Image (tube, rainbow, N blue to C red; front, top):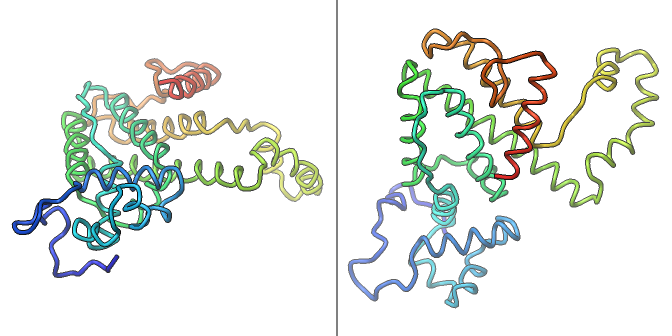
Length: 273
């Protein structure tokens, strides 16, 4: 596919059906759906025009009528994969941001190529715009200024994207090497013990002794809880909260053991929804 011309209108400004000539056999949405299916199962590089055309039973050159450039293909793939799911504000900022973060994470996990691709290009397709309008509406009644609202959304979006990319990288490394995180830690244990025995790393030594690194779902919940705690503390006056620390899904905090158990329950429940 050719490079995108700066003078050419973006894909969303170009009519899907040409004013002249034969009517198109396929829609952009159909092409994007096939490309997404290939990318989900084989990786983004496998979603070539030739592979897509083969699935659709047409010639590769025919697809250039629909999407002349690779960036056009990626643009419609991202917007189609992102989709749009309505969300009504509940009036509970923490609960609404939790829903937003979980939805974004699940989309990225369903489409492992999406987060890295989205991080490299600004996309403002129809679904993106609907999603942004929804997210702004969720925060509209929380008493934040527009700049603060955008900062909060950017923080949640960026953190979820980074957390998912780390999770997917861990999965890919395990698949490639055949060694999961638990097996890797057992393999590294003799080396770590010998290193920590030197006394040069007292803080690392304490971390190894007392820290419990949970599975991906629990790590996500813990990280999200910390971010939401910070948002509540910073904007407690505007949002009407007292800034008290509490985990996702909890309303009255409690001792550390209770908070940790609550986060673990939330992590388990998120995998079954």
